[in-house]
Image (cartoon, rainbow over all chains, first blue to last red):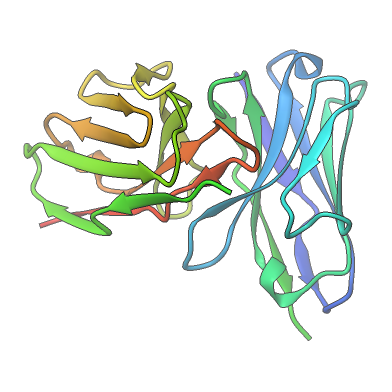
Length: 117
Length: 107
């Protein structure tokens, strides 16, 4: 069974940093692109970042470029999102998702990041 | 950035009814459009990819159509578990973008 489990969220002050993790199991992690998507409370879904199967290609939404870094450790079957210089508008539930190519077919349950003083 | 506009914002229907949800793109996305369902407290669930292909395990009552800029998600006969928020998503250009969602609620 495919499983994606996010962790690392929490309450952080503006300007602070966190590292989100997504532990994958039940599939060949190193064969898939992976994505981070966030859902702002009361609003919709927004793409954050993506990474290819070997980690050599990364892409970011303009709103997080230069502040967020996506990475992966295929030996540990884990996806990461280093988030820094956090702002109130980064408050959201962050989901990791597996991407076979035509849609994100498995998602984690999400980890909540709250940016507040 | 491609903007997706979903309509209506809220759709009030009864179990057994037919639901028609629309998604319009600000420019052509060819057939690179997906639909997701999200329930409160749950992760999004892929329903349709490439505009008209059902994802694995999705019931046949869910159908997608359209190409270019206009797309439709149809649920032929609503089941109680179908009441949720539905998002369209384009994957033609990065950044991938989502519509603002259509809330399907019980009438």
